[in-house]
Length: 611
Image (cartoon, rainbow, N blue to C red; front, top):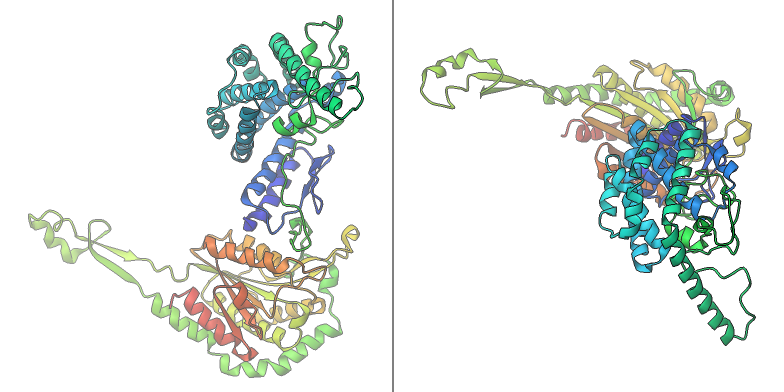
């Protein structure tokens, strides 16, 4: 769900920070890890809940490798990246670091169990259809490992329990259960990684006879098929290197010393360790096996979020949002500088709008009166629990079970004012002039009412812009948030709000509504009040300065998700534009800016007072 995207970004950064790793979201779909930075594809309009979970789980998994795996050991062994030994070793090392990570980081345990169970289910289905030696080995490994890790990953164990592993392979693996469980307790990088390596070697030694025989059969069958095809096409004979198997890999013609193992001759009894897997095997059965020539675990982000297209809006990295918090004096100095445009804004507002608000001065009083009517104290009498009601004490004299117990009364607390409000104002270029002035007037009235009634309110403006301080991103237009009043600011008077609006009026550009709404939604969602209302004032459809392709669909999906969850009420107030009718279920349009205050009163009646 896109409303979770900001929290997902925060999560992966917090997780990566445990190992001193940075996170970069980029437009290309090439998730990778170079040891210092994890590169992830940007979250887009079509990103699903499952893909967001995969983002979090994969980053946690990479961090676990950085913290608990020794990549030096991998380099010392000089193992073929496509060899069977590395495949099994990586499987065991994943089991080790995942177990340690699950015990330390609960978020990983739940995310990995949820996402990997689907992947494992697909692998087992594929393995059952193929009935190859590789599928037999993978099925047994999964069933064996998930049973030992069931306390941390119950869904994985449940999925694996439906498979029927080869009995001979399982008998061998069961003899090594104690060693795998013991490796789960080794926190030292080198000792733990060497333990899983030695375990992988010993497992393959025990499986050598059966595996080697079956691999050779598959190889011969594959070579036979290839020879037949070559003959029919009058092609040359197969190369001396031997053809790849359809599934199950290939056996090298001579024993290799690159696996870190000593060899005796071509008939070495541990020749199975030198088996090389095909690209098809790696694609079909690997969960987190690294690409060729890459370090173990460094490319274990094994998922494929929907690729970016022209009409698929990419979510801006949360850390790149430009935030100007006026009350806290946070932001770049350029947004705090007064100039001629600043003074013109104030002069025009005081001249053209303020005098016309005389008829609206009773706005706050109208709201107070409504709330007083709704907030009258109510009491409940004749109940079994509460404060003793002396006027009903005579009931205890009657022998009437139920009736003689109802001698208490309760005060019913009114929750009318248990609410928080965020006013999100479009401060894009098209709002210049009267619309911006009346938006300011409306926020002043809302602020007055909420301050008087102690309703927490946050007032935010939004547009987009470039960072003047971070030159590396100076050419990129990012969402720009103006905070005029925080929830924590108990009182911000009228003159101060005018000052803040006038300062921001110098930088009115685009309006990427979807991302700005997400930012405000994320802040409002943390409030504890029973009712939470997000009012979005806008004068048109979303339009970002950098590009608007896919932004409308992205904004619509964000709003629909907020409306569906019902954790927050969202309301679109259209300023001289009916675009809000397309995006918001709850909406109203003001064609005459002078009507904005009355529309806000109507909104408060409906959303806060339930009138």
